[in-house]
Image (cartoon, rainbow, N blue to C red; front, side, top):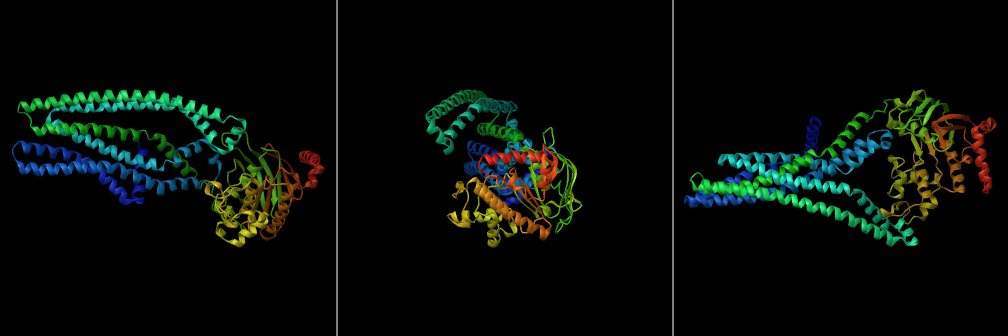
Length: 602
C-alpha cells in the first residue's frame, strides 16, 4: 500500500508540474461534481416545499437555483471525464512517457535488453503512460464517488432509516454488472487463441510479402475462408457471453427498481400520515437515482484502481530495477588520451542471464597498443560477447579487463564509449536521412558534411550515395515515405557510421562485411587496415576484427582463436599455421571450400 500511495503522490506531482492548469481544473471539477449533487437535491426539495406552502417567490427562486444546480451538475459530470482524460493523456505522453524511456536508457549495459522478465514489463508499460495517469485520476474520482455516497446516505437517513436499505439495493445492479463483465472477460480469454489465429490469417492475407506466395500457390482464398471461419467462431462465443451479461444487468436493474418503488411507497405513506412533505418525496426520487449512479461510478473507478496491478506492478518493478542498475557499471576515472600499454584480459569470464554455461571462460591475453587483432571461431564461440565486454555493455562475471593498467570497470562509461567506434554484426537501421544515419556515429559532428563524406569514403559507399534520389538528404525507410536499402547497403551505412570518429582508442569491426560480395569485402578491408595503422600511430588505438572469413584476418598482428568460450590459440597467421592446431584446421577447411568455388583465399 505504501508503494501505491507513493506512486499516486509521484504521479500527482508529475501531473502538477507538467500541466498545472489542467490538474487544478480536474480537481475542482471532481470536487464540484460531489458538492453539486447534494446541493441540487436539497434545493429541489426546498423549492417543492415552498410551492406547497404557497411561498411563490421562494419557490421561483428555489426553482431557478435547482435548475442551475442540476445544469451545473450535468456539465461538471460531462467535463470531469473529458478533462481528467485530457490531463492524463497530455501529461502521460509529454512528461511520463519520456521519463519511462529515459529511465530505461540510463541503464548502461545491455543485459537487461536480453532478459525476458525485463522485456515483458517494458511491453506492458511502453504504451501505458497515459493509462498510469488515468488510473491516478480514477482513484481521485473513486474518492469523490465514495464521498457522494456518504452524502446521499446522510440525506436518506435523516428522512427515514429504512431508506438506507436503498444503498444495499443500489449495490445489486453494480454486482450484477460486475458479474456480467466477468463473463465477458472469461469469454475474451477463452477466445484469445482463436482471436490470434484469425489476426494471423488476416495479416497473412494482407501482407505484401506473404501475399505473393499465397497468390502463386493459389492458397489465398483458403486463407481468407479460414480467417472468416475463425472470426465467426470467436464472435459467436463472445456474443453468447454478451447476452448473458445483458441478462445479469437486467436482473440488477429490476431489483433496484423494486426497491426504489418500495421506497417511494414508504414516503407516500409517511406524507399521507403527516410525517413528511412533498419535498421529501421529491428528495427521495432524486437522491435514490443519484445513489445508484454514484455507486456505479465509485465501484467502477475503484475496480479500475484496484485492478491497476497489471500496469502498476510492472511499472514499479521497472522503476526499482532501474534504481538498482542505473550507473551500476559506471566508473569514475577518466579515459586516457592515448593507449601506451594496451588491453589486458585476465581470466575473463561471462555468462548470460538464465544460461547454465559461460559464453566466455577464463580468457587471458595481452593486446598491445596499436595492434590489429582478429578474433575467429565457429558460431557461438564467444567472439561477439568479448567485443561487448570491451565496450562495457556487460560487466565481467569474473576476472578483469585492464586498459593501460586501469580496470575497465573503473573508467567512466560515457568517456570510454566516446573513444570507441564500432560496426556491429547486428547493426542498427536508422530510418532518418542518409546523412544523419552516418552522422550518428559522432553526434558532435552530426551535420558536418566533411566528416560525413570522409566516413562514406572509408566504407566505399560513394556509389550508393550517387544512386539515392536525394543524395545525402534521402529519407531512409519506405514506411516513412523514403527508400529501402538492401542488406549490403545497410551494412555500408553501419561501416561509414563507425568511421565518423577520428580518434578512437578502440575500433571494432564485428563481421563488418558479412552482407557484401568478395570484391567489395577485399576493397573495404584494405581501406580499414590502412585506417587502423593510421589510428595506431596517432592514438595507439587497437583495432579488433571479428570475422568468419579467414582471408580477411591473415594480415592481423594477432589472431585469437575461440572455441566454446575459451581462448585455445593466439598468435600471427604464420605462427598458428605452424602450430597446426584448430586455426590451421579451420583455415584449411575454408581454403578448400573457396577453391572448390573458384576463389582463392589470401
